Length: 75
Image (cartoon, rainbow, N blue to C red; front, top):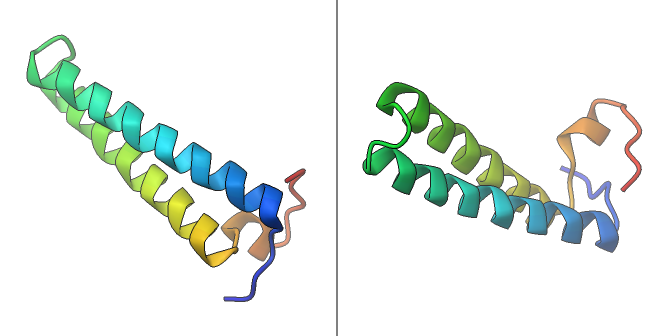
Protein backbone atom coordinates (compact mmCIF):
# COMPACT_ATOMS: atom_id res chain seq x y z
CA UNK A 1 0.00 0.00 0.00
CA UNK A 2 1.49 3.23 -1.17
CA UNK A 3 0.80 6.43 0.76
CA UNK A 4 -1.78 8.40 -1.24
CA UNK A 5 -3.12 11.01 1.24
CA UNK A 6 -1.48 13.97 2.92
CA UNK A 7 -1.44 15.01 6.58
CA UNK A 8 -4.77 16.85 6.34
CA UNK A 9 -6.47 13.79 4.85
CA UNK A 10 -4.95 11.53 7.47
CA UNK A 11 -6.25 13.75 10.29
CA UNK A 12 -9.71 13.89 8.72
CA UNK A 13 -9.84 10.09 8.54
CA UNK A 14 -8.54 9.72 12.10
CA UNK A 15 -11.18 12.07 13.53
CA UNK A 16 -13.90 10.42 11.44
CA UNK A 17 -12.83 7.00 12.70
CA UNK A 18 -12.83 8.09 16.33
CA UNK A 19 -16.27 9.69 15.92
CA UNK A 20 -17.66 6.56 14.24
CA UNK A 21 -16.41 4.31 17.04
CA UNK A 22 -17.81 6.69 19.68
CA UNK A 23 -21.14 6.66 17.83
CA UNK A 24 -21.00 2.85 17.78
CA UNK A 25 -20.55 2.79 21.56
CA UNK A 26 -23.49 5.19 21.97
CA UNK A 27 -25.69 3.01 19.74
CA UNK A 28 -24.56 -0.07 21.69
CA UNK A 29 -25.73 1.53 24.94
CA UNK A 30 -29.08 2.45 23.39
CA UNK A 31 -29.47 -1.09 22.08
CA UNK A 32 -28.47 -2.61 25.42
CA UNK A 33 -31.19 -0.69 27.27
CA UNK A 34 -33.72 -1.60 24.53
CA UNK A 35 -34.27 1.90 23.15
CA UNK A 36 -33.38 0.57 19.69
CA UNK A 37 -34.54 -2.89 18.50
CA UNK A 38 -31.74 -5.44 18.95
CA UNK A 39 -31.48 -6.64 15.35
CA UNK A 40 -31.18 -3.14 13.93
CA UNK A 41 -29.09 -1.79 16.81
CA UNK A 42 -26.36 -4.45 16.78
CA UNK A 43 -26.10 -4.22 13.00
CA UNK A 44 -25.58 -0.45 13.32
CA UNK A 45 -23.00 -1.00 16.06
CA UNK A 46 -21.07 -3.47 13.92
CA UNK A 47 -21.15 -1.21 10.86
CA UNK A 48 -20.13 1.90 12.75
CA UNK A 49 -17.34 0.14 14.64
CA UNK A 50 -15.95 -1.58 11.54
CA UNK A 51 -16.15 1.64 9.51
CA UNK A 52 -14.44 3.62 12.26
CA UNK A 53 -11.69 1.05 12.66
CA UNK A 54 -11.09 1.04 8.90
CA UNK A 55 -10.92 4.84 8.81
CA UNK A 56 -8.33 4.77 11.61
CA UNK A 57 -6.40 2.12 9.65
CA UNK A 58 -6.43 4.40 6.59
CA UNK A 59 -5.18 7.30 8.72
CA UNK A 60 -2.35 5.25 10.22
CA UNK A 61 -1.20 3.91 6.85
CA UNK A 62 -1.74 7.14 4.92
CA UNK A 63 -3.73 5.19 2.38
CA UNK A 64 -7.27 5.72 1.10
CA UNK A 65 -9.18 2.91 -0.60
CA UNK A 66 -11.31 5.36 -2.60
CA UNK A 67 -8.21 7.08 -3.99
CA UNK A 68 -6.59 3.70 -4.61
CA UNK A 69 -9.36 2.79 -7.08
CA UNK A 70 -8.93 6.09 -8.92
CA UNK A 71 -11.64 8.37 -7.53
CA UNK A 72 -10.45 11.90 -6.71
CA UNK A 73 -11.32 13.08 -3.19
CA UNK A 74 -11.10 16.66 -1.86
CA UNK A 75 -8.95 15.69 1.18
